[in-house]
Length: 322
Image 1 (tube, rainbow, N blue to C red):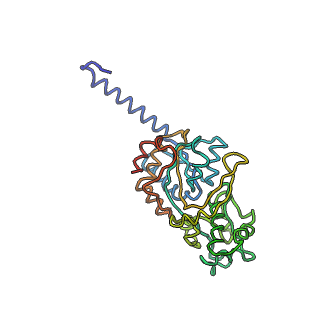
Image 2: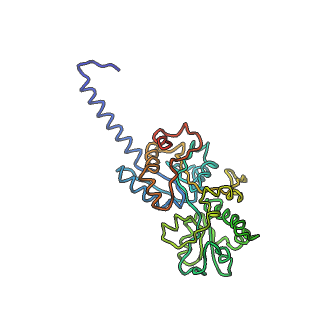
Image 3: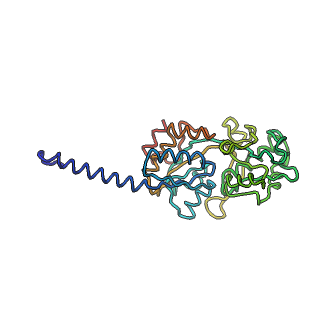
């Protein structure tokens, strides 16, 4: 709107001051708390990232809720919980459960691989290696565990590893033997829940991500690339394994096929603090965020890959597609 030439300076000052106050109030109000639902295996890097982000943005408090990735999605779908960001250990969780009703897009941002964590005093710990781990686990008195396939990608990835191991080691029936040898008491909602059981001596071995082993400075068996779900080179071999798990609605099932491990992240459609969420995702995808992921054993996907409705990807994040 055109104003009198004599008064623009004073008027502009008032407008600028008002706008600055409004923006400051809006940002402070919006960014006071940023809620992130994320996979348990992201706890360590996201804790570090949250601290770095808070240092850069005084007044912002990052609230993290760690759970199995599918449980994170269920909080949104079944419980109607709101969050600003959802980060999954398997990008297909976002594809299968959140898009298109609850989210529009999905960014692949990191990789990982399966491993077997153990203690120095675990049974047969001096003998176990990448070539005999399955025979060690099946010995009488050896306790091993994994997370729930219906709640956590690490759980169904464990099943896929067992199926691939049967083919790789040429041991007929190995998958069923490993399933039978792992009682329900050794299954928990997310893989990081099992670390306490391992440390307490209730478990000798735990199927978990390699990054978590590194973060906890734990001993682990490094599995062959053909079965650890960490190599794009063996994507064709991985596809020979598959498992059915609970789908989006009761009684519905989806089949998870073996594939290289890729983490995904999205901002739900009803995110309460959209602009702050965009800032955090941009930080994650930027140099400092990628360095934090790399340091914690989770190699970044860069340039990032996006699925879903790319047109709805926030402008501040689109720059990372270059």
